[in-house]
Length: 145
Image 1: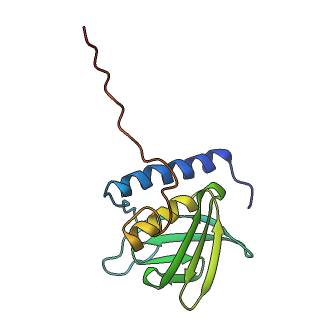
Image 2: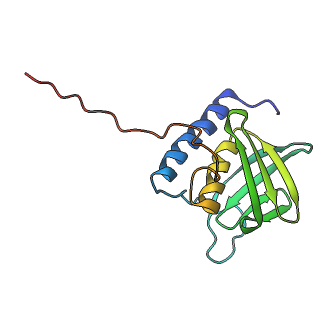
């Protein structure tokens, strides 16, 4: 993995944690202002650089219908498997007709949660245990006098 600023690594992991908690409670990712031309009804969720394993650094753009990775575009309905490794800031993506693409970077754990929310309606792929604790409300202390 290329060298990343520790602040970026922390921010990406923290964003993944917060989004995973939101999705686990029934929430959805929030759309951002588009940076690429979108199709009718398509929403963009984010864009950031990723390092493709065995390749180079590319710009990843994620929408509710596709993942654009540099010049390549993968339809989310063609994804046959996702294998997130948040502790390594990595995600392996199996796409019908394209094989497996693995990428790493500070925002990749967040990207994995967004993809899972769109594809599976959950924060993690089927069969994966919850990898981080969901945010919890602070307990109220009651004083008995």
